[in-house]
Length: 265
Ligand code: ADP
Ligand code: MG
Image (tube, rainbow, N blue to C red; front, side, top):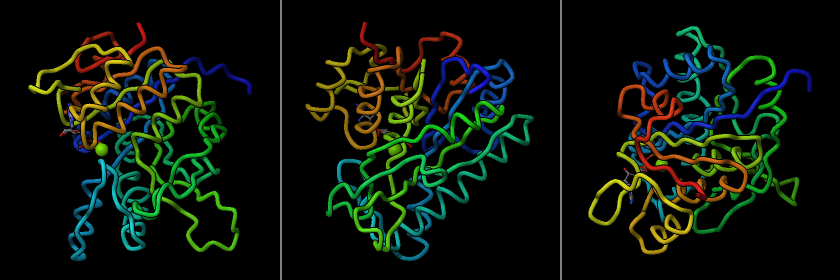
C-alpha cells in the first residue's frame, strides 16, 4: 500500500481506562497528532457483568475467562461492539482525533474457533486479517477494536457466527500479526506484582512464565502476560501499566518506566 505506516503501537484499554473524562483519550489524540500509528483494543468485561446482573444472570469465570452461554454472548456482542466501542470512538473524535470503531467480525479481522466446550461461545483465535486495520491506518484513522470474532467453522450452516474473545488475547494477536514496536496494557493495578504485592518493574519472558505457572499472576493478569509473551516474537517491548494514573499512556511512550515491562533483554 502507498503511505508508509511506520511501526505500530497496540494499546489495550482495560476496565477502568475508558471513561470519556479519562486522560487516556487525550493521550491517544495527542499521539495521533504526533504521527504515531495506534491500534486500540478495548475490554468491557465489567460492563457485561453489570448488564447480565440487570437481567438476573451472574457471570462465571474459569482462569480469568468468561464462561459464555447464548444470552451472555448476545449481551457481550451488544455491550462490546456497541456501547463501549462507540463511547471510546466518540470520545476520541470529540477531542479532535480521527477514530473508526471496528469489531473482530468486520472485514473478518479476528477469526476463531470454539476453544473448549466448558467456556461456551468463546473463541480461540486462529487467524488475524490485518487488512482492515492497515486500510484504516493508511487513511489516517485509529482503529478501535471490539473483542468479538468471526466464528470460523467447518459447518457453514452453524447458527452461531460470532464468538466472544478475550480482549487481551486480541491485542496480543494483533501485535503479533503487525509490524509492532510496542504492546501496552492499561489496567487497574500498578503493574505485575510479586506474591507480596510489590511491583515488578522489569521481567524477562522466562520470569513472566514462572509467575503464571506458580499462580502468582492470576485471573485477568494471565491473558495479559500470555499476550505479551506471544507478541515478543516480533515486538521489542511489552508493558502492563496503571491506567488509573493521569497520562499513563503518553508517559509510557515517552520513555517513562512505570508499571511492568516484559522484554527479552
Ligand atoms: P483489565 O480490565 O485491565 O483486563 P483485569 O481485572 O482483567 O483488568 O486484570 C487485572 C487484575 O489482575 C488486577 O486487578 C489484579 O486483581 C489481577 N492480578 C492477578 N495477579 C496479579 C499480579 N501478579 N499482579 C498484578 N495484578 C494481578
Ligand atoms: Mg481483563
